[in-house]
Image (cartoon, rainbow, N blue to C red; front, side, top):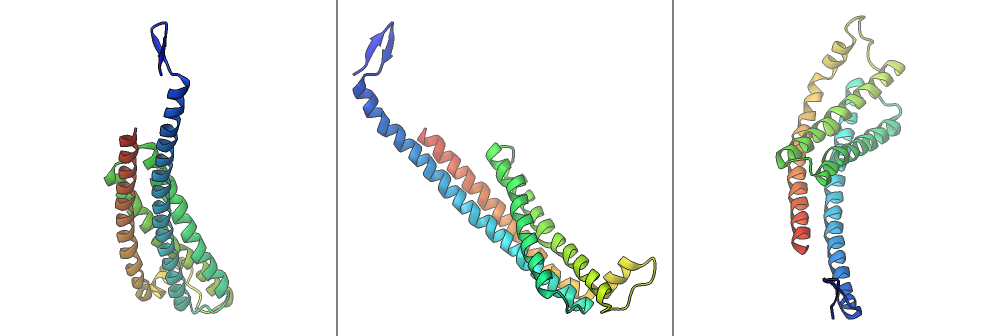
Length: 200
């Protein structure tokens, strides 16, 4: 029962005991919403990073074949699997997830950032990394003729121009995954936020 002190209602012990379970229930529901949203977000981000890892494996395979490299296979495959995965996950968290929680991003911006992360971290970065690592191994073990002076980059690109076209497959896939992941993440975040507001 509420009592009044100086014109202000004060809650009695019974009212406090009645309200406490309601407050706890609301807090538990909010935590449940956030837990579900974060779990779904983690799955999407991990899937996105895994796709980048497969892209790295494919890029490594292509450049090893182009440069006829047969040394340090485990070392190059390990780095081309883990580094694209980690870069994709970390970049996605910084540029998309954190921006969503801060409320500084629109749906279009979310999708754009997600797709760009897929292209840069999931295709361009693995290609550059595979090109660099296997190019060094090719020079070290003399598996291909050394390029003439002044035309090193052009020589390497001409050497693998046919095989590199296969990287269009992960480029398209990473772009599609990025768009899909951005849309899903934004929709889940909006749904969770709306439910939380309604609970209030």
